[in-house]
Image (tube, rainbow, N blue to C red; front, side, top):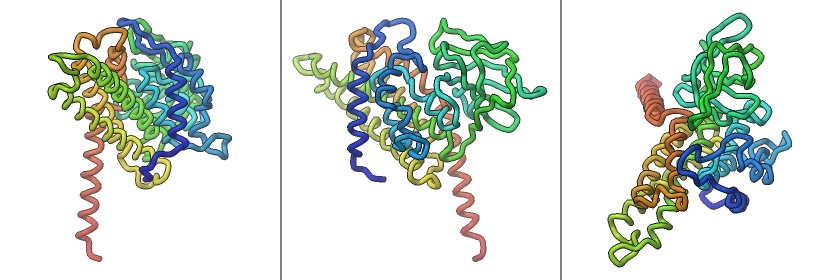
Length: 351
């Protein structure tokens, strides 16, 4: 892995920050803190940069920048505390599906555990409830469990038995024996090291990393000018040391996330559990760093000027998507135990 900054990605990061700075943030203390999906306000920024082409191979008319560019886009969206209008189209592109759909059903492990698909003649019937990115999308890509594993299904917004609850945030989609045909299967969602689910987990890890980095930046800036006992707040050991530890956590998580993306792009045979590790780390880092940032700013944290309430609600809503962190760590641990047993068994076998 080349640790030197890529000049192209550096310029891309600058362009994203400049564009997202012009997107008005939701400053209300109540209601949804962001707008997700293809109708979100961040979509024009991504379209202007042709973000849909970043990960697409050159042979398919894309730019061939790889998953690393996709992770960077997700990180900057999280850092700006804006909705993630990138992940749905990126996952759909991985599976050869058109853009513009919303995602639902990625909250548990294995993926699709919130929605079950019961076999019927000609297809399945969906039952369950899951969060959804965009309630206005014409199609919803639903992760569901079938007898053969997890699959991604394309369901029309007006399908029988489908209802959307948008009075809460994040909004939820409910299925009550919603029929889907075999032809509506977009693709499988297995644990292939460099497959669509692993790539989606790394993008989500980037988004959570950005949430942590943005909240930490806000807290450091506030503690830099807020004075207490005749000195800046961040110069007090009780404030400065936790902020420094949080910065270490953010940088360690960034290394894990981008190493995972680099492995998918350059060494797919060596990916292993890197996507799961990166997502679990990012979820924990976002939770802990946002909480510390809220504590650092005290009562000022819940104000529209600082906007930390948006990071707080985003971290709470996003941390469990694409797999609960504890379940991810258990899956990683089980995989390493199996690998160790295989290695030991191979070592004792006669040559």
